[in-house]
Image (tube, rainbow, N blue to C red; front, side, top):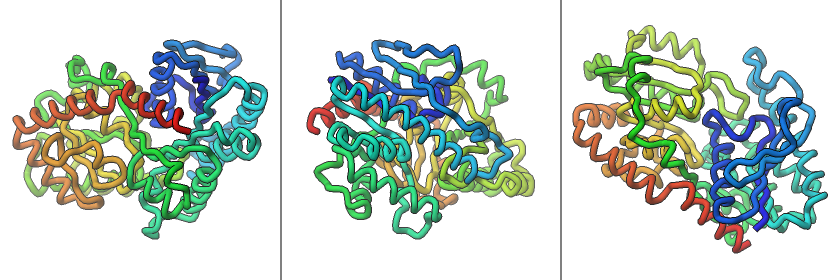
Length: 410
């Protein structure tokens, strides 16, 4: 098949940091190319020195020149302004993509879209190509839809997302809960929806990595390390992670534990960031300065080592699509604790490779963390099960085969 994967146009592919949609696009494309298909990723040109095309492991990355408005990454601008600038830049990129698709329509079988604004622009400007379009919704807010927790901007985004879904040939949901919302709220025809979970590179993320230097760097030697990875946002449940740390340290009396948070404090997305000043004040008031650590954003290579250097992985999200960080931690041989939202329950078999807890419940979270701290043999058993499950079910090669089936059944 001749497949075009459309990137977001504002962050370079191949990705060097953990942007989930970009990792999905790049890794699926590599594996589809290895299966003998002609795969092209459309991305922006980010500097004058960028070539028109690059090749990686049999796939082609075509770089299109598009105007970019500066300021979307500035931490001084309000979140909504950064979000608006990001969206505007993606639309400008989409105009270039639309022209490319119009010129090359006869040589394309599948057009795979991954971002609402990009997909809307392309589907409107290339309506005759909609029969070739597949859209993956990475929007975690679908799980919260109908709970009255969405902001006005989030509700608008969900509405536009559903509008796009009804105008493409196939829609890919990242989990069953999202699929149900697409049908009941988005009014998408059930026969047009397929569930394809995200995957992981089980060679890149693996337990055999030497993490000695990383443990020394963060002063983790001889300590129990509980790891969170993701945007430091409210929807990721960051506050409950820190409140659980308080219970572990100040209520249960564990003083040799490190709660490590990896991720950006500032970002230009729909999610509300945590209140930094309020969070730091809470940490100081509870005397958690020696137990709670923020690393900021790490590269994928740094992150894969930190997974191995940790003991327990926790994702306490209030809503999710299909979080890559969970399967990355699993592939790294770690027990995982997550909330019963989105695609997380598909990855965690309660009591087998980790635990499921209710969202917004720091006591449940702390109880499960305490159990794993107290029982190193259970940590080892669950970590081995996580690795086994990741290799058998979530390797990108297996996910690519499922996606190819969706393409072929279009």
